[in-house]
Image 1 (tube, rainbow, N blue to C red):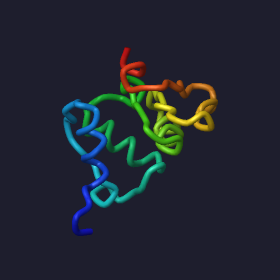
Image 2 (tube, one colour):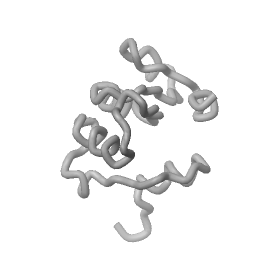
Image 3 (tube, rainbow, N blue to C red):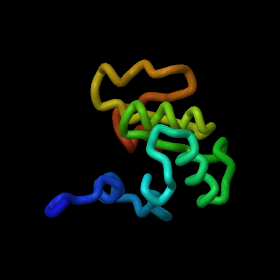
Image 4 (cartoon, rainbow, N blue to C red):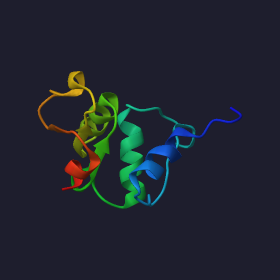
Length: 99
C-alpha cells in the first residue's frame, strides 16, 4: 500500500539491531505462526532451532517459534500477554530479553 511501511522492517529499525536477513511470508510460502516459517529461518541461520533465541513481539509469534523448537521469549507489553505456556519466557522489554 502506498505510504505504508512494511512491518518486517519496522521492528528491526525500532530495536536498533541489524538483522542478518529478513524472511517474508510470501517468500517462505507460509504465514506465522506455522512452524515451517521458523524452521526455514533456522536453516538460513545455519543453526538448529534449539540454539536460536527468538524474541517475539506477539503471543502468536511466541507460540509458533516455541512449537518449532526455538528458545522463545515474548516481550509482553500488556498484562494479558503474560502467562504463556511453560517454556516461553515473558519479559517486559527487549533489553530484559537480551540481558
